[in-house]
Length: 115
Length: 108
Image 1: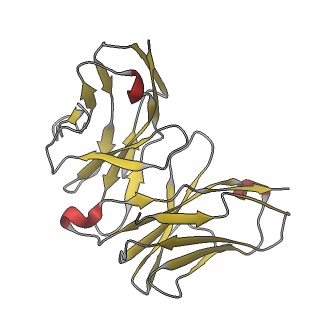
Image 2: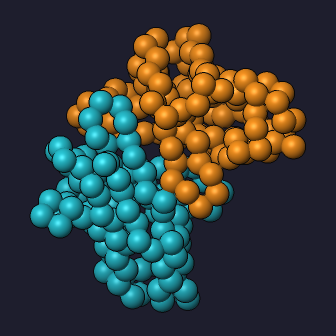
């Protein structure tokens, strides 16, 4: 089954210790997104890649970085996690950003706990 | 400001009753609107989009530009419809803004 896979499903990290979340896709989609979703809140877009072009949302903290080494993989790096960064992190893909190809396909999410 | 508002955090209805999940948006441009659904222990997935004007699993949603609304409706709720529903607004380019979601609970 073509899909979006996030690893790990649950991640516990220490305050201030760098952590990386992973996302892979078998859909061969051009666009990959990272969303942050805190409890009872809407998913919030952090950034996206269109192919290799990286686009950061204006209000995404500098503490959050991303890498996309190839079409299939995308990583979310949190350089110095704070307690406020505990959340569900959702990876999504879309074929493109236009027309009927804007449907987003989501992974299962990684729940990050900061201790 | 671009915003999606889902006024109800929780909506509880009996099986067979009509259901309407409300969504209002704020956007000055031409909106592209979606409903996404998340069933228990499953990933978020697209339910329907306004440009398709289709009915999925008995659900329909009509874009009302005058009232800036995109309410999701189903005439007869089923227990399997119990899930979290998110309204989403695509504002051009690659940005999609989600509402906070409404949890629908269909009682037997």
